[in-house]
Structures are given as C-alpha cells and as structure tokens.
Picture (cartoon, rainbow, N blue to C red):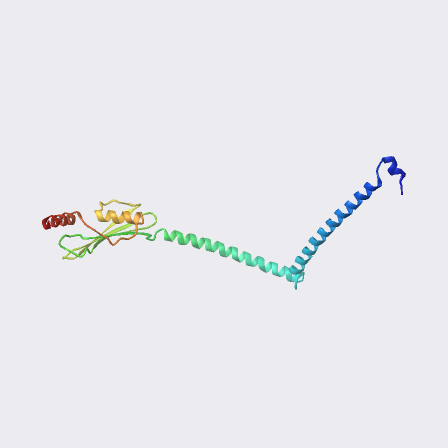
Length: 191
C-alpha cells in the first residue's frame, strides 16, 4: 500500500507506523496512570463518605469546628493563666542561701545561722540568728536587687552570695576569725 501523498513528501510509511505505535503506548501508560489515581481518589472519597449523606457530613463538620473553637478559647485561657502564675511567682522566694556558724566563742554546737531568701529579682531578706547562753538574737536585713543598705556581717554576705549564685546548701560550719585564732593558739599550745 503506497500513498502518492507520502511519496511526494518523501516520508516512509514505516516511520508513521512506528510513530503511531509509540504514541499509542504512551497514551496507554498515561491512561493506566490516570485510572490508578482515579481509583485511589474514589476509594478515599468512599471511605470519607461512608455512612454519611450530605446533611450528616455537614453536621459533623460543624461539630468539629465548634470543638476547635472551644479548644482555641481554652488555649487562650491557659495562656492567660500561665501569665498570671508567672507574674505571681516573680515575687515568691526562689533562691535560698544558708551559712551555719558559731557566733560566740563560749557557746558550742554552732547553732547560729544566716539565712538569705530572695525572689527572682534578687530582692528579699537576710535573717541572722545568733544563739548564745543568754538567748537567741535574731536580726533581719532587707535586700533589694542583690544589695543591702545596711552593712552585712561576713556570714550574712556569704549567705547572700550563696542565694544569688544558687550554690547548694552546705552543712560545713563556718569558723569566725576569733574561733580560728583560738584553734590555732590551742594547736600551738599542744605542740
């Protein structure tokens, strides 16, 4: 079968046949691909619509939207509550530092202590309790932003530093200068 038109154009009919065969194969592959996508979409749609008509689907969507609105309100309330709690906690004591010491040479047991209690802004109090044979004397000094307007004793300063720098509480008893002198003198007398 020869065509006068193809001969005048100089085209071999075998090339047209090959071109048509390749085009049919490409179209078949595209058809299979589109058919598979359609089946997947149809299955998804059927599982989504299973047991529901348009009206019940609309009701379920509206109920989900109302649940989302409720969650949004609850989230907003929770955020406000967290802000309120944080604001209240700023004034609470968060930092504590304590130093135990022997305030008077004649009194044993090292029952005296200096206690610093500070909030998040390093403001609060230093309480100093000095124990003696006659009684216990307690002093309190106000701390504002890590500083005292009243002169602090050595033990009070150390307790304040421990609180500010959040050092762990230590049961080590601090020796006063007089106790160190006394201890050194007794050690020399023994030698």
